[in-house]
Picture 1 (cartoon, rainbow over the protein chains, first blue to last red):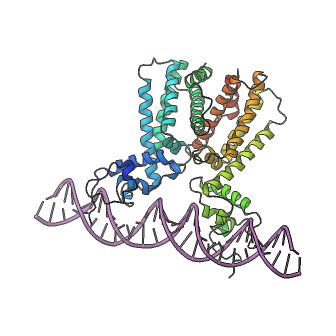
Picture 2 (picture 1 turned 180 degrees about the vertical axis):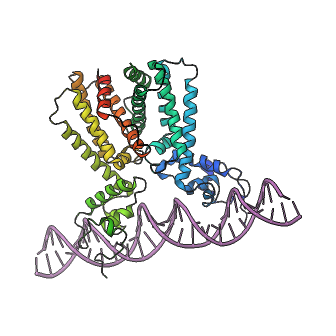
Length: 213
Length: 213
DNA sequence: TAACATAAGTTAGAAATGCTCACTTTGACA
DNA sequence: TGTCAAAGTGAGCATTTCTAACTTATGTTA
């Protein structure tokens, strides 16, 4: 019988053997599966991801995930939520040391948004590309709103508004739309042509100035 | 033995029986499959679409599509290309009768973009959401560039530039990014909350003014 | 008009996937 | 130490994509 690393390896063993379990129980399979999923989504793309692959990578049977997740979409949702948390942390870190009320902070938020979209395109598309349509996980919605909240605050500060009013919301919405679209387009561009490099800092700065003036 | 409408109907027959074939040969199965695919992509979402479903809807066996398309991605690509052609036609139609060199034309282009994204979200996501990543169909790329070309022309006219130079490209790129992101966001919003309606005309007008001034 | 090459269908089936069910192992705690 | 629930396993069903070998219809050419 011998479960210990019984090989249906051979396929994955060479490329990336990681997070294999030790005995019958894994320790933290939930976390391992999330990490495996994240990795595979980036590697093969959100639409080619399969639960089976994640199982192979984590070294467990294909029935194991269903002790931790209801189904495949729930696994993907977990990965997205984790990604949003990471994104928000990155954003807050990027803001440290930049003077409040300046365009520099707005630009930093935008750059971090682009960074995330280009560094983790799989997750970004998973969240915004239309895969998780029917999933209306409250955690997901909330984490998105929190991140938007960061922008709202900064825009209010830039405009000298004491509170987040309709005008602040309107301008923030415009900035978000712009950077959001830019994220998709730059990734697509990067895949097809490689030409016409754009100076992102200058671009973001210019747009911030035009929208916040 | 009896091919004539042998029933594996019963499932789809009631809901939407259409484009069923007459004899052994279909007539134009390729077109029928594209239409069935388009319909299903909108109905079930790009990720839940299955070739089998399209076959059922078209009333043919599951092997039939492979006489017309290499594989599933190629079917989806065909649908996207068809969608882009339709989108471009809509855009050109929307421009008719609006005076050249005015912001109104830029706004019309943006509105048509949003219209398409919201009226045919399945196809829009199929094209831009990250499903057709690896497909680098030249037709697809070209049709996208043509549509962007329309915007470039209008922006040049608005700026009073005699030709499409770097500055024209830069401004057009900004406008496209904005509307592109807006398309994604509005669709997502429409799914989750329903609140906070925005005046799209005013928004587009404001942004056009700020970016093109 | 008959023959026939070929395009365009069909059925059958292999391999992979998502998920369920009944079973087994293990660790934690009374 | 004994027991129970949590967390694994293997087998298997339904569905999917795609291929292979076969059949039917069609249009061209002799």
